[in-house]
Length: 349
Image (cartoon, rainbow, N blue to C red; front, side, top):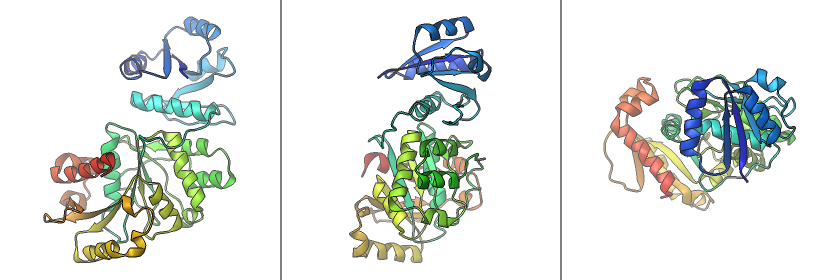
């Protein structure tokens, strides 16, 4: 079914940029109409049924809009509130992201059933039984690279998360609100939508759990509901999940849902010993997710010969606190290592 979307604004820069994106990139499923004059949009609303009207707040408060049309305020952040009917879309982002937010609002605010994961969406899990291996930095680096051309999410579920060296994002909805929504079976999509925020590098991030016990309190089914809702609401092409240590029931469920999971070990004697033990453990080999597991040695200072193991070169700049995007731009070996992981996700090898 084609969606009819009206966009009305006096912000000509926004209209020019967004309409150019729509004409170039949006082929099917939508009919867009752009307006700069109030009389024209008023007449159009009387003559046609729009599924969504994107405009500034003062106009939406006064316009005679059909009941079934979703009113969306032009804003600097995206949020949805079914109770008050106040919905906002961040217009200061890429055209593809504006459209994705509109799709999300039509699905949530319009009451339509959100579809489950489609085959183009990828869930990528990062796990390690060894601390301090650079797992978090590696997971975020992949999310950052994918965010340059796609929609990607970085989700940290660690027991003692620290991400300030990667991004600083202000969240308006906490993860405990998401947890309560899942537990109470209430409007999870809307709460989850409001919890997502883009950082300065266009990576969609979520707040961490305030207490690790909150994550532990999720059942396996609730964990699956959480990830499925995240997929459906965000429509993200990639979701990178940074798991805590220990194969808990929640983490195992996520590993089973993942398209691929990267198990990270440091390129040291201890790291190699742990990796060999995991690789030879028949109880782990029998787990449902094992055939999707890929082993990664991180912080490698010399080239290895084991083709079954992916090796990510050591970055002195990362160890000294340089920003990840600067390292990816300046360290070709580290960039190529991250790109190899992304290609493995896309190719399913």
